[in-house]
Image (cartoon, rainbow, N blue to C red; front, side, top):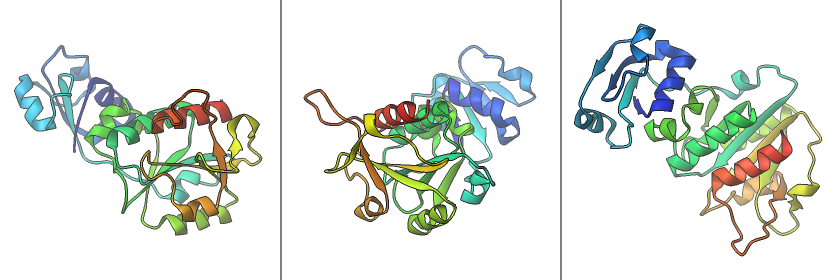
Length: 227
């Protein structure tokens, strides 16, 4: 996989430099040459062709791949665990921005769907500013089974959705040490089957527009509840 962007490459280098095969750059060296990884200077057009975008900021890296984690590995016997599930989020920029928020808020892991929604990609690395190098991500083959597994492990489920009878965020407090926070796509929202299994919380709006984009909703909720 080719990843691009200054922060994405820097953080990947810090988190797991063994996963990087080489780095190409067209700007100043940024210190990459001192890390024992092959580094070459290339022109911008070459980087644009390799990255398949002009948004590479003058640096790309080839990595061996992204390793998804199992839920058991993420939980790993911890007494206090907070996870985020993004339900049918198709925009890689929304996914990357949400990963960045989750990592900054101290979330222990994220769940995304294998059949529906964006997967980890170069655009996600770039938009997350490298946060995807640190946040464990589980690729769920069957979210229904994964939710039942988490319930057996003592997790409470919370869907953040603007629905009738939802608990306003200012009135909400965590009651357990193991929690799954669920956010849906801006278009489809959270699936009805998941809403039925969870407690619904809404973020009150005071303006004339009655919605936030995904990463802003994730930020508003997590930093209110966890920080």
